[in-house]
Length: 396
Image: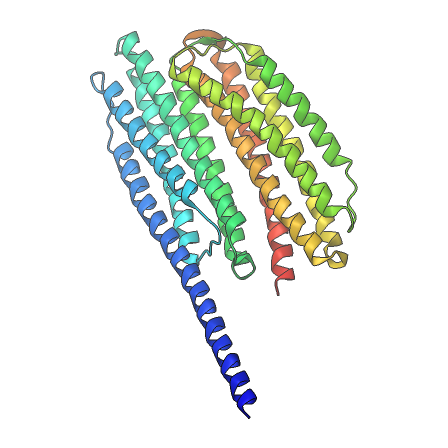
C-alpha cells in the first residue's frame, strides 16, 4: 500500500515537472516570436523614415552633395540595424504571421526607396548642364553609393528571411506563409535591382567611360572553382543511401567558395573606402561570368532538390532531415554569393576614379548581372520551396 502511494507521488511529481518544462518551452518560443516581431516593427519604422527622407529631397546645384551624403548615412545606419538584428537571431526561433508580414512590408518599402533613388538620379542628370564638373563628380559618387546601399539593404533583408527559415522550429505549421514571404522577397528584390540599374544608367549619362584596375586573378580562380562545382553537382547521382553525405559535401564546397568570394568582396570594400578602385573590361566581364557561374550552380542544385523530393518517400527520416539542413544552408549560401557578386560590381562602379569603359558597356554588363541574379534567386526560391514542402510533409 505504501509502495503504491509512493509510486503515485513520483508519477504526479514527474507530470508536474513535464508540464512545467512544456510551459517553459512554449513561453520561450512565444517570447522569441514576440522579440523578433518587435525588432522587425522597429526596423520597418526606420526604413519608412529613410524612405521619407529620400522622397523629400529636391536636388539643386548647392545641396546635391550634402543631401545625397546625408541620405547615404541614413541608409548605412539602416543597413547596420538590419545586420544587428540578423546577428542576434538565435535558435530555437519560432516565427509567426506578424513577423512574416513585417518582413514583406520592409522589402516593399525598399522597393519604393529604389524608385525614389531613380528619381533622384534623373534630377542629378538634369543638373549636369548647370553645375560645375567637380560638384557633379562628387554627386555622382554619392548617388552610386546610395544606390549600392539600397541594393545592400534588399540583399540583407532576403538573407534575414533565409536565416529565419534556417532557424525556424515551426516550418511545418508555417510552410505556406514562409513560401509566400520568400516569393514576395524575391519579387521585391528583382524590382529593387531593376530600379538600381535604372539609377546607374541615369547616373552614367553624366560620364562617358571608366578606367580601372582589376581583381582578375581572384575572379578567374573563383569562376574556375565554381564551374567545376556546378559540373560536379550536375553529375551527382543521389540515392536514399548517399543523399545526406552528398548534400553535406556539396554544402561544404559551396561554403568554401562563398568564403573565397567574401574575401574578395572585403578587399574591394576596403579599396573602395580608400578611393583606389580602377576597372577594365576584363574584370567587369569576369564579374558577369561569375554571375553566370553562380546561376549554373543554382540550377544544378534545383535539379538535385527535385531528385531528393522524388526519393523522400523511401528515405529514412534521419537521412532526410540531415539532407534538408544541408539543402537550406546551401541554398542560403548561394543567395549570399549572388548578392556579394552584385555588390562588388556596384562598389567598383561607384568608386571608379577614372574613365575608361563606355557607359554602354557597363550598362550591358549590369543588365546581364541583373538577369543572372533574378534567375539564381528563382532557383534558390524553388529549392527552398521543395525543402520546406518535404519538411512539412514529414512533420505531419
